[in-house]
Amino acid sequence: MPDTATIRAFLGERHLALAGEVERFVALRVAPLPMPQGDPEGREQARQILSLLGEEGWLGYAVPETWGGHWPEPDLRACCLIREALSAASPLADAVFALQCLGSMPITLAGSEAQRSRWLPEVASGRAMAAFAMTEPEAGSDVSSLATVASREGDGYVLSGRKTLISNAGIADFHLVFAATNREAGSRGLSCFLVEAGTPGLTFLGPQVLSAPHPLGELGFESCRLSAESRVGPEGEGFKLGMRTLDRLRPTVAAAACGMAARALDEAVAHARRRRQFGKPLAENQIVQEKLAIMATDLQAARLLVYRAAWEGDIGDLGDAGEGRRISLPAAMAKAFATEAAQRIVDSALQILGGRGVLAEHPVEHLYRSVRALRIYEGTTEIQHLVIARHLLKEATPPVSPTPLVSQE
Image (cartoon, rainbow, N blue to C red; front, side):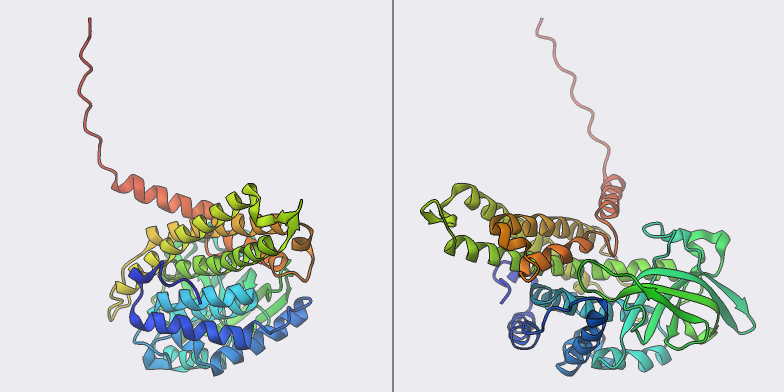
C-alpha cells in the first residue's frame, strides 16, 4: 500500500480505505498482466485494461456521481492514489485510467446535459475510451498557435486540420478536439468539440510508436462536419477549458511519477540487500546508502507536493457554472518536481541494479522507458517553471528600502 502516513494530513477516511482497496486490486488483477510487446499488442491490452477498470468500478472516480461516478465530484486525491498504485505495476494501465480522466474532465466542467448523460456513464463503465486532442505538428506548448480550424457552416461547423501525439488515437470512441473558431483572436478564439469515432472526415493517420508501450498516433480532419451540439462549452472558451482541465489533472500526472519512483526504489532496496559484492551486501556500501537516502527523500518531498496540490483542487467549489478555483501554482510545482525527481530515482535505481537493470524483462528497465514521457506531456517541466515564476513575480511585493550603511570612519 502507498505510504498514507506521510500524506495523512491531506486525506480523508474514505481515501485511506481507497488506498488499501486499489493496492489489493492492482496486486491481483494488474500486476500479473504481461508486458505488451510492440504497439499492436499494447493497443489490444489497453482496451482490455479499460474494460477491467470499468468492471471493477475504478473509472467511477473520474466522473461525478450523477453520471455513474462514486462521489459527488471527481476527486483528485482519489485519482492520485489510483494512478500512483497503477503506475507502479503497469504504466500502460495508468495511462488508460489517466486518459479517461483527461477526456471526460472538459465534459464534466463545461459539457451540456446531453453530452454528460451520453458519455460520462460510458466513461465510468469502461464502455467508451476517451482521447484528448490538442497537440499539433506545429503547436505543442504554444497552444495559441493551433492550426486546426472549425469553420462555421450553417448551424454547425466544419473541422479541418491535423493532430499529433494523441494518446488513444485509433482506438478511442470519442475525442475532445481543440480548434480555432476565430484565428485572429489567438487563444481567445479556440473552442472545444466532442467528435465521436466514425464521424465522416475523421481519419486515423497512423500510430506513433513510443519506446514504452502506449497507444499514440495522429488524427486527420478533412471536411469533418459537426453539429453545434458537439461544441463543449461556449465558443471561444476552449483555451480556458483546456487549461482548467490540465490544471486539475497535473497533480495526478505527478502521482503517477511517484508510483513509478516508489517501485524503482523498492526494487533498488531489495537488490542492494541481496546482492553481494566484495564480500558484503551492496547495501553496506556507503555510496549506495547515499543514493538510497536521496531517492527516498526526493520521493517523500514529491508525494507531499502532489497530495497538497490535489487537496487544494478538491476543497475548491466547482459551482454550477463549473468555474472552480485554479490550482495552477501547486499543480505546476507538483508536476515539475515529482516528474523530475522520478526520473532521477529511476535512473539511480538502474545504476544500483547494474547490468540487471538494463535487461528488457526487468521492471526498472520498463520504468526507465516509461517515466521519461511524464516530464513532457500535459505541460513540460520548463512550462511548469514559467507558471511558477509568473506567480512569484505577480505576487511579489516591492522590497523595503534598506537602511544605508553607517560609515565606520
